[in-house]
Amino acid sequence: MHRATPSWKLAGWLAGWQAVRDDGRVRAELLELAYAEPRLRQLFPWTGMGELHFSRCTEKRWTWDIPYIQPASGGTYWVSGPSRSESVGPAATAQEAIAMVVERLPAHCGPAFAGTPEELAAHEATPRKP
Image (cartoon, rainbow, N blue to C red; front, side, top):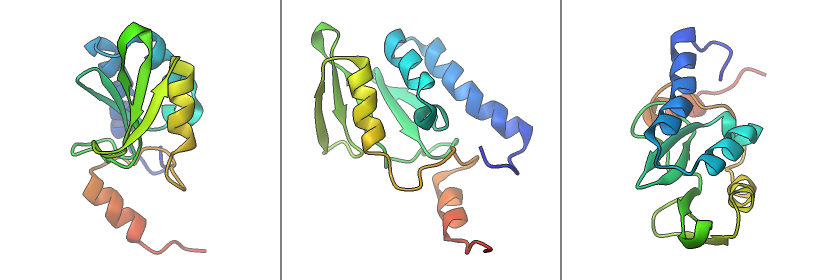
């Protein structure tokens, strides 16, 4: 998270991981391995239809610029995205699926921004002080 992030918003980021765990639709092995990967752990997770998604911001409408992982038959996975019309390919294991997502993270993909996609875009558009 960003240094200036209020503690209550940081708690929201951590609550996202707990919410996905509590939801129960994402395979436990996948969720544990995703959380163990530092580049994914810093993002905000969310789930839909048993898929594990990652967002660069903590509030809805989450970002759709990171591939996501779908469960497939026989305990395997399918990596898609970032958009629903894009497909990355099959993964035999959760570890392989996670590696496929990490390889495709956007440039400068840092800790989840505490806010909405619109607030994230405004933050990214703000010139940085040298």
